[in-house]
Amino acid sequence: MGTPQLTKNQSLVMGALAHSEGPMSAYTILDKLRDQGFRAPLQVYRALDKLLEYGLVHRLESLNAFVACTCPHEHEHDRGVTAFTICEGCGQVTEFHDAAIEDRLSALVRAQSFKTEKTTIEIRGHCKSCAA
Amino acid sequence: MGTPQLTKNQSLVMGALAHSEGPMSAYTILDKLRDQGFRAPLQVYRALDKLLEYGLVHRLESLNAFVACTCPHEHEHDRGVTAFTICEGCGQVTEFHDAAIEDRLSALVRAQSFKTEKTTIEIRGHCKSCAA
DNA sequence: ATCGCACACGTTATAGCATAACGCAATTGA
DNA sequence: TCAATTGCGTTATGCTATAACGTGTGCGAT
Image 1 (cartoon, rainbow over the protein chains, first blue to last red):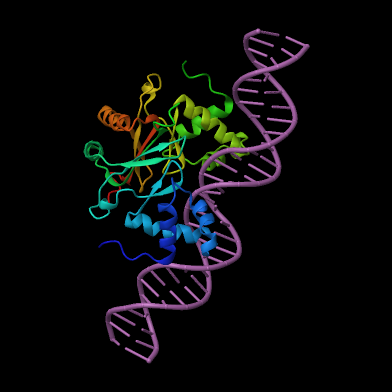
Image 2 (tube, each protein chain N blue to C red):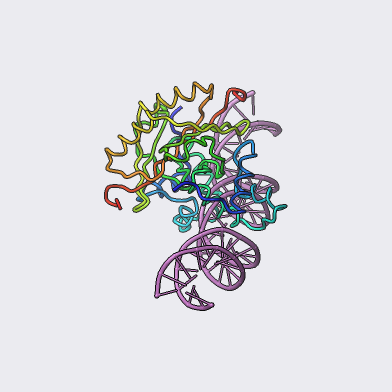
């Protein structure tokens, strides 16, 4: 079960995100794609739902925004946890993965007999260039 | 610099959250407090801002909702990272802290020369009772 | 073939979350 | 007394997300 061929709308949204410097809200994506025929939020949200499902895009919960996945090799083997640093200055988002955190979280959660479906780790702050 | 005396509105919002089983959105809080004279969202949001600042309340980013802090002893020593499990079934939220995760995250972030301001860790899934 | 189904799409309307901008009142400290 | 700060109330607005309806297309099963 790989990634299916993207539809036109999915490709357009994916392209907008891939060419963007940083994360974009659904409505910002909509505005970027008006010239390509987009008219309504649902066109964006429906495409985003699929792209999220395929693992090509991540949602940043603390920003209500979306970024293209920057780990192309990891689409296949469903890597569990993705973490992000998000710079408040320049908006730069860096994606990273760490087995140690994954293992530790997994153990803590198992101790509660909790069954994980999705894990969100987002670190807001300032990157090297934007440090206060 | 401890927690100042709460104002009337802050106390009402804190009370609503403390007596709630689970997280509540700002608008749900507003509805609960209409009988106490609340009329507008800003009354809730302004109180929440202060309660968040004092560490009495947490915001759940993946839910756009708020919960009372369940670790009363930790208000003083500003414990860095708070993590949550959030049950999709019953809505129960469990707050926990872990030094190992904190240390590991801190090291990874430092390797990027990133300066952390706020860390969000939220695990969505099902609790023991609600397991599929 | 054609029926039924799944899926993507388009559109309008609405729901849910959050803040801007104004003005008033009470408190405090210079 | 004056200015600064803080909390409060109100109206209006903006941003984020989904409901509900209908259309068209591809495709396998009978």
